[in-house]
Amino acid sequence: MKGLKLGIAALAIMAMTSVVNASGVGYIDYAKVIDNYDYAKQVTKEVDAKGLEMQQFLVDKEKEYKNLDTPLKKQTFEERVSQEFKAKEAAYVALREKREKEVFSKVQDAAKAVMVEQKLDAVMDVRGVFVGGIDITQNVIQKLKVVK
Image 1 (cartoon, rainbow, N blue to C red):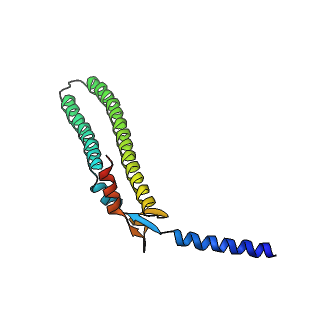
Image 2 (image 1 turned 90 degrees about the horizontal axis):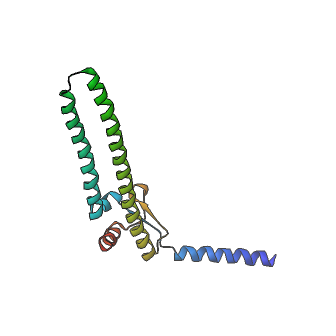
Image 3 (image 1 turned 45 degrees about the horizontal axis):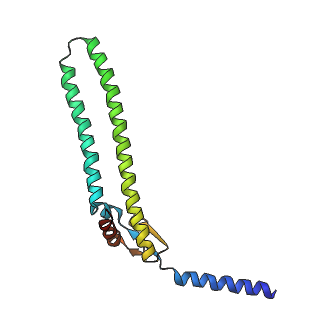
C-alpha cells in the first residue's frame, strides 16, 4: 500500500514537472512563410515556367493540326500529341510534387529548429489554432533566410 502511494506521488510529481518544463504550442502561418521564402519563390517560378511550356506546346500543336489536310493525318497526329502531352503532364506533376516536398521539408526543418530553441511541445499551422499558442512565423522565416 505504501509502495502504491509512493508510486502515485512520483507520477504526480513527474506530471507536474513535465507541465512546468513545457512551453506550449507554437504555430506558423505557412502561407506567410512561403511568401517570404526566396527558395519557395524560385520553386514557384520554375513550376510555373513548366506549366507555361506545356501551354505553349498545345498552342504549337494546334497550329500544326490546322495545317493537316486529311482525316487520317489528323487522327494520327492527335494520338501522337496526346501521348506526348500525357508524358509532359506526368513530368510536370512529378516536378511540382518533388519541389513542393522540398520546400515543405525545409520549412518543417526550420520549424523544428525553432521548436527546439523555444522549448515548445509542438508546432501547428495557424489554421489549426483557435485560441492560444505562440506565433513563431517570423522566427521560422528568419531561420529559412539563414539556411540556404
